[in-house]
Image (cartoon, rainbow, N blue to C red):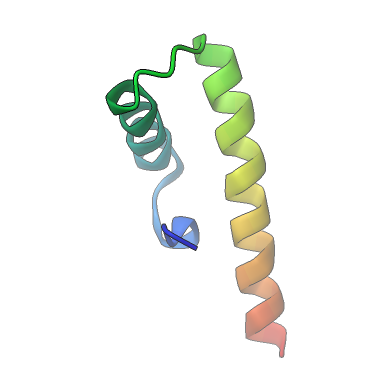
Length: 54
């Protein structure tokens, strides 16, 4: 994993993700950015909770 998203505030994470897309010159509308980031963020948090259980 490149980013430890579970340690980031959600708003900060979206800004970072959006900034990366802009640097890569990938154009997406705001809702698409939020939807994609939301999936990644939820998976990251779920993965962390699973690791904490183990």
